[in-house]
Image (cartoon, rainbow over all chains, first blue to last red; front, top):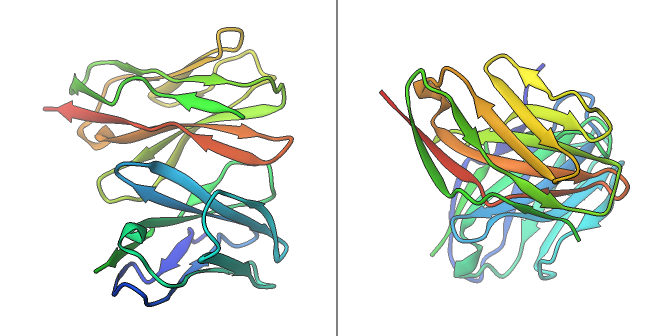
Length: 112
Length: 114
C-alpha cells in the first residue's frame, strides 16, 4: 500500500496570505490528523477528522481550519499567515479512531 | 490531561551497542496504547513499536523492544545492536483510546556513532 502523501512538500508564503495543504491517507484509512511541528514546541495537535467530521481539535486559533472529503483526503487551511506559522505540518492517518497513526513526510511551510 | 515526558533530550551510542531511551507518562485511564515513533533527518515519522496497556508482555520488533512498567507509568525503548540508520529523533506517544487523543513527548535525539 502507498503511504500517506502530502502536497506540496515545501511552501514559501508571505505574511497575511493564506495557504492550503493537502493530505491523502493510506488507502482504507478513514481517520486523518494534523500536527504542527516546530523546534521549540515539538508536535502540537491541530485537529482530527473521521468520516468527514472534525472529531477532535487542538488549541489553535480559528485561522487554522480543515476539512475531509468523502474519499478521506483532507485539506488544512491557514489564513492570514503569521511568521510564527512557519513549521513542518504533518498529516497522519489511521484505519479507525483509537489506533496507531501513520505519518506523511510533511509540508515545510516558511512564512516571510 | 495526560502528559508524556522524555527526560533525555539527546543521547549518543556507538554502533553495535545497546541504548535505552526513557519515557514516563501520567494518566488515570486504563484504556490506552503506547508507541515509539522514529523521525530520521529526512523527516518521515515512522512507527517503531506499539504496546497495548492491557498486555503484560513487553512488545518486541526485531532489534527494538520496550520495558513497559504499568504501575510506574514507564515505557522505555531499548535498541540493540545500534546501526547508523537508527540516528533519528525518537518520540514516545500515548493514545487515550476513550477519547482518541494522542499525546507526544518532546523527543530524544539519538546519534549513533561509527
